[in-house]
Length: 411
Image (cartoon, rainbow, N blue to C red):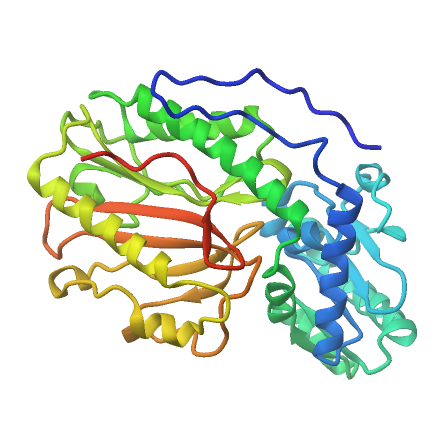
């Protein structure tokens, strides 16, 4: 059973940029979406000569089976996972008494109560519980992966050792899932557009309410509220800073009071409707009047994004992109961002393309229906302020289609 979501009336900001809040509930074929994603996982397993995987990461469980339960909690507790064989039943091992939550999902062949061995849940019974879990995996192996080789994405040391003692080899499922998730279906793209719509509603509200005297946390909370009230899920980071806290980048938001004429830079990192991520960065100036130094920083960031995005098209290798990418001036290079481009989907995804001096992706190329973000951070080493900008794109037949439409500043 799929519940219809209430559609809230269109939100109309005072400025010309108008976002229609579209959750696209009736445009998305959820059965097709789920089948596409599960099929991608199975094909990647086959490509790597594997018969099955066990997934603990809630994002991977969401991708494979579209099943959701306490995602953030289960990111740091091994209390929910699924078994995906190439041939055989998909099994969700659900948290205590929560089987009802996934009964509507037709790709789950069987629901079983979770066997967990973490100390928080089991205390002095942890070792005994681990033996039960290993026996369960052995039973699965006897039926569905007789090679005794299993891909697992997240696992603690005692569990790996216990499986190895039973001659079951554990390989990293990260490659499997990252490669599965990299090419998006049309329904995934619709989900992502919905998440971006919600993020940009939040950005509009943030800009409208930005004023001297409010704290960074108060401003950041506006995006959180907008996301939650529009069926979003969580925000991965707290990357909002003002004034001198914008340089260097990566300082998370605080109770610092925002002052008039300061730059405010932020990165949404927002997991929105349907679990898809809207990863957009913007920079405002309090009072909306950029001084000459602020204009220079902002113009450079725009130039970097425009230059690099114009390079990207299907078939361009990551290596060639790195070699041809925009040349960040020396006095800014020490404060460079961690990457120039990364994939985006249910969260930040492969590839992760660093600056040439930082190594990173050497093999691979951009492909049609990959979704990516193009990043820029401009802040002089020892400088006062910095500008963070980021745009989200779909790689189409001939190049990039811009997915994030909140306008950049006219300076």
